[in-house]
Image (cartoon, rainbow, N blue to C red; front, side, top):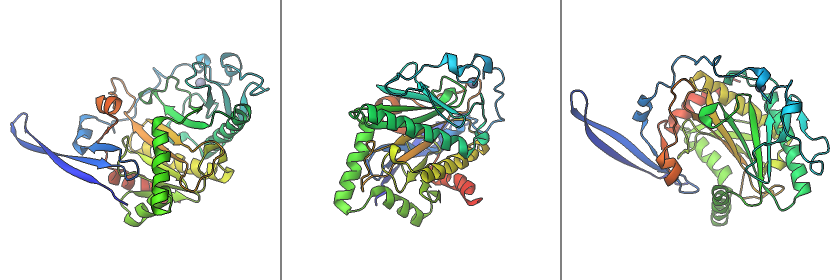
Length: 344
Ligand SMILES: [Zn+2]
């Protein structure tokens, strides 16, 4: 497996002494897709990302105005049409799934993770994610029974405004489309190509390769393995790979539980690092399709710390050139996240 990178330097005369300063930039390519990112660790100096925890009390909003809080959810959230879900909403434990009020796909649900209006990253518990994934699988089963032509699901969790979340109340979204996104399509195609070339699954190979090398391997929990990918798409990126499933609907209860355990560990690690906003997203094969060349996986990235006057971290390179600008080397990310997997 090739981990291709090229180093370059940029020279300038630094204020205020105007002495000569050299900074290093590394261009890395993803071993499967060839997608590029560039890393300059000095860029982290632009932000005070580990400053004291922000005080959310002024901005979190009052729970009595939140449509996702238990006292409002029945009146303030939409219902699924009866042909999809006779009960109108799907419930699992504390989680409640209902249609997204402003859908971006033919099938687009929103689901709460807890009845509590706001949680810090170290307050999420595995059962919340297990219940949420149980409701997700139930929703996907109903969608695929109702409309067999749609088949490509995305499970995403945006947390706090820097991640693009519009609501503070912890929630996920599940979209199901007829066609995969161009990036998902590329992942599937590259995985097929790798399989026909080497006769093995890239996703299983990359876990073994990273485990052997050690520098980006984070840990595993039964059916799920976690690494810091070589060419990340975001800062502090963790790649969570389901070794035994290709698609989100096929997730077994024990796999959902292993995943929940890993995500909770990662969020606790983020919390310890001073992070409070993140994106998590799955990359799934077609619903119901178990294929030997592809493993369902998810990516978790940190977003700028939510505080007054926070700065966005997505700019021209990401929006127009599809190349990530990274300030946290994956080897460093793995070292910091690993401790939360070693502690039992
Ligand atoms: Zn709420």
